[in-house]
Image (cartoon, rainbow, N blue to C red; front, side, top):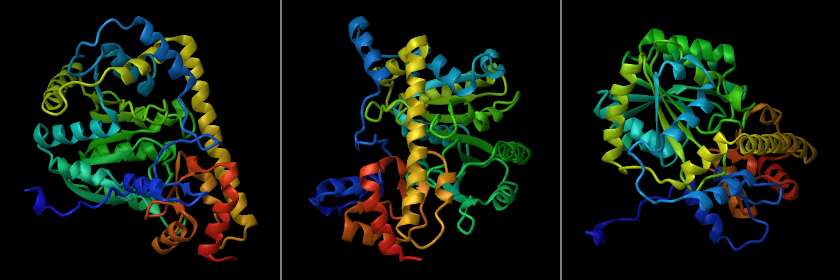
Length: 399
């Protein structure tokens, strides 16, 4: 059977990292994969994570299975982070959370649940969206359609067309929304726009699935959750998939969650029972270590404060790199106005680079960028900024 197979195409993002690793050229720059790096180009373990792991190593007494949905303490910590302490949705018991192996697994469980239990046939994703979204949903049997999101002319949100498209989505379909730090554009709705999006979704009878992978990397832990919390209004339903890869640096630990938000506590528990059945047929139950790290940090006042400081430092450095990128491109005489990059949020920027320019950067300068022109701003450093901007100015032309 294997002999008859042809090679599968490499993943658009992870395949780029594999090619980068094989490139022998010195001074190569990887701005493809969504991994945070410090100004020395390193992806270090958070200090708060190291301390939590030391405590776990000392106190852990078993390697027994976790329940299908994971630790209750983990679920409570995730809910408080997502929705805030004392919120109605949490206090009323309208929320149930399962620990998933990363945000991707949370999305896949959500997709399986929506298809098999919710009898949903189609999901609408933004144009553009994370490259893995369509294949995750298609693998679960959902039809994938797109709604307008990014305005290439203004380099901002195409809110009018987005809202109109939502108002035309057939009732009963699912819409995927990015909670903050939209991947790949870095363009987010303002709070008043979020309110109109929520109202349009509810009025149309469309079911919201929110991908919330970057909390804290945009404007702040609380500020970034504002749009998500609007969907927790009394009597409303939603699914929220969150990830701790970026804001805890737990990439390889695969830590995320799938949260069910029900109109009532009884509704939430009924839906959650089917989520657990879906998990059981998938990965059975989650790994413990990464979730235990998150739970330990969020429950300890000192560790939580230290972690919040580390998230703030990451956010500040990303903002600094955005500003420096814009300034250096201008200094190098790159053709065009790149000031929009400083207004975007999170790790990613829709640079405006075309495929030919992306290919030229890789072939001539060993600079690796995703084919659609998405740049991981967190991969920039003060050391690589000059050669990066010089190369970009070269392939784009100078003004």
